Image (cartoon, rainbow, N blue to C red):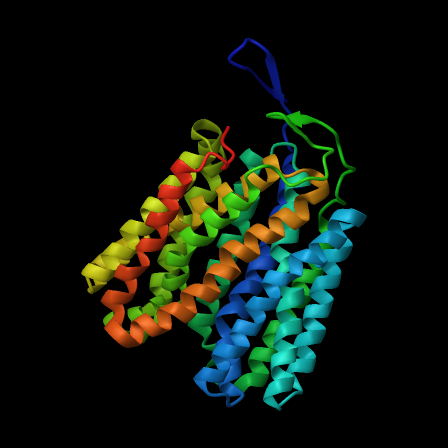
Length: 399
């Protein structure tokens, strides 16, 4: 049954509910996507290491993947927007990702490896943002239900990560075993795409004064991207160097457990985050994420022991969960459908890939110069600056 409520002026608002079957289909897609993420993303550096490349060259290869990921929305996402064939573009991106990985596995000269890494990032990075855009267009109430289907990805990521940890699958077999596992993961991604429905036709409506048939990105979009980019540099520093820090403080055997703890904390945020956004709005939601990021980095900087670190991992539900949900819902709500894939791709590439480029490169110098305490203490500057901008820049779109 559809839900109804009344606006402040007494007008009737109708919320069309999404069927359980549709939510399950999108849940399966996210489970396949992030199960593959658990296989691919953490082990790409190890794959390059097993190939015999030095850490400096591994850093360049990873940077190449991120750089091309930033550029991908301008081409891949635009194709999806203009054609409306999201499933085809997603499937094509996965197929070309697998082909790029296959070619990369048969290269050895470093310049050729860089070119292969650029191709891999160009096709691999847009897959999740294209899926988010398709979900936003397909669900009648994406604010409420996006987190409910996205949580399937979180659970899948946890299960696959723990399975890899417990089985020790990659402790032997060399880089070929990792390569084979990544290809298999991409295959399951591809199988899951036809499960979800095709993108619905463009609809024309007016939301908060924004005509959905417009071809323009909304006022405040660039400001929104920059706030997210700056605020997420602090998280990128944690993402890049947290594992090294955990290994130094708690030992290598506890690293996966600490990351699993963070992922577990993300589940309630994904389930209830949509309702919270509807109640408090995007700006307060993003503010909570940034404040939690400040708290997390401060704890990591000042308290180098296992218990404070474990407790700080519980803030992941806010620093990542609330941040992601706010950004995705903002794009789904304010970016016109004809620009939705590009808007989502820009949010993901700028806020995550872009901040990761800055956080990892800048963080490396800070770590060498002053150690982990200085690294995480300095990173607090970024979410703090973003928080100030968020509440002083009127161009940021608020409800």
